[in-house]
Picture 1 (cartoon, one colour):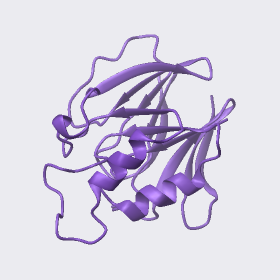
Picture 2 (tube, one colour; picture 1 turned 30 degrees about the vertical axis):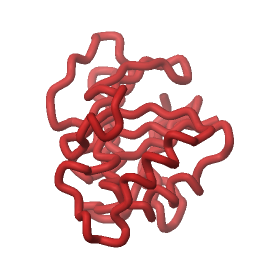
Picture 3 (tube, helix red, strand yellow; picture 1 turned 90 degrees about the vertical axis):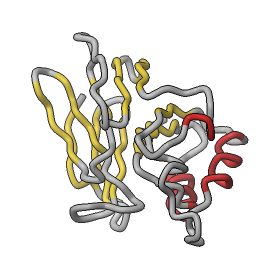
Length: 169
């Protein structure tokens, strides 16, 4: 089992289908906001399909963690929040989009955020900070996503399927 970490999908059905294809049956998706982009979305673009993503996500057999981003309208997919703390692989994870400051507890091990569309993987004061970048609209370099498993956190290049950066947990 692994956690596939993504953000900033912005209603792209092609990105959504790509992410689903990367998952195995027991994998868990972690979405750090701007999944639907129903606030500013490109409603006339043929790839913009937040309703199809919502319908697919509602019927998915995969477990997932999700928080709203600044482009998501909560009433479109109610029942979530702008931040979430959960335990995975015996690590405490704080998930938020990154457009506002969240309240991060001192015993958090991994902080995940999106918003910038730029991947990053850093360790500060014993905490891992992960931004998976974006597959839909990467701002610097490759289309990327993150993977968390029982031993490591890494940033993956979508095109090559190889790690760009990695660190042990």
